[in-house]
Amino acid sequence: MERDERRAHILATAMAIIDDRGHSGLTMRGLARECGLSAPGLMHYFPDMPTLVVAVVAYREERDEELFQGIEPGPGTTRAILDAGIENIIARPKAAELFAIVEAQAIDPRHPGHEYFKQRADAIITEFAPIVGAEYAHPEELIRQLIAVADGLQLNWLRDPTAFDLLERWHAIADPLLAAAQRCETA
Image (cartoon, rainbow, N blue to C red; front, side, top):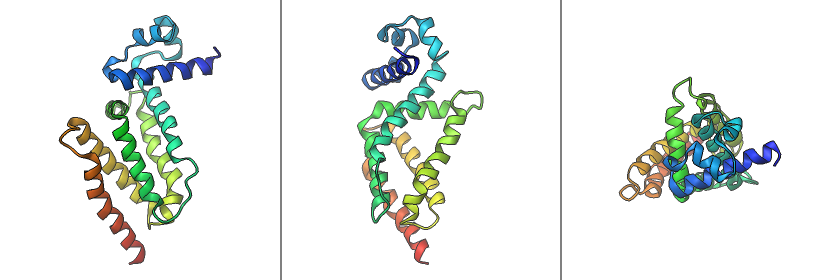
């Protein structure tokens, strides 16, 4: 395999392991074995577990971008995007768990994902501000608030998915937040 193709195969295999066994089921040695590589061969692509899991999170984000391809601004588009994001979390709980764990670890500036997560929010704002701005005033600030709300809800849901209805809580918070943002536009 070419280098990029091998790297993509490693990431897809790692994501499949996580989807099946959770993040704790992913080991460098096990992943190398599943990919037909030696551990040193795998380390040629990903020198350590933190670097690997950041790459897996980025891979997951790229895979999930398909949910939002071809979206045109219009009435209800913002809410549809947000609902799709929450439904994606529910559909892929182990990927959501990995994301939350790696994001928390990346608070440390020495973590290989530190810059990734700092830049991720800015990239989301840049990508979605034109769409959100078609419906709401101050789209950048609204997106920051929505990211914070979604992250907090996701953590609470991950702690106890049977007792915490993520979709219900999302609607309870999103409806008034979006209504308030709409009012700001007309005020």
